[in-house]
Length: 64
Image 1 (tube, rainbow, N blue to C red):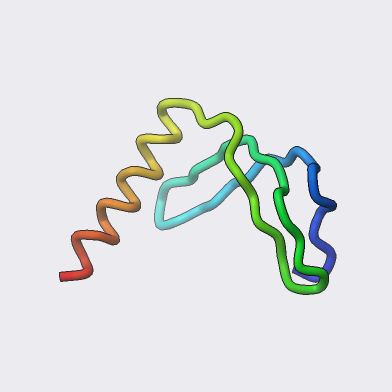
Image 2 (image 1 turned 60 degrees about the vertical axis):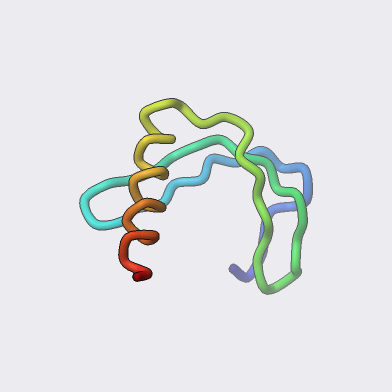
């Protein structure tokens, strides 16, 4: 990410993986110019949380 959003900016984060997508509201909490930014989720709907939990479970299952 060449120009990350400024710290404190409210954003919508959307991630696509396989045939599913995850979307949530977030806020930029730190910025590394010309590199990227850190985001904290501020509002995640239950159905979106289920998608994220499934992805994390799938990753955990594939570790061992």
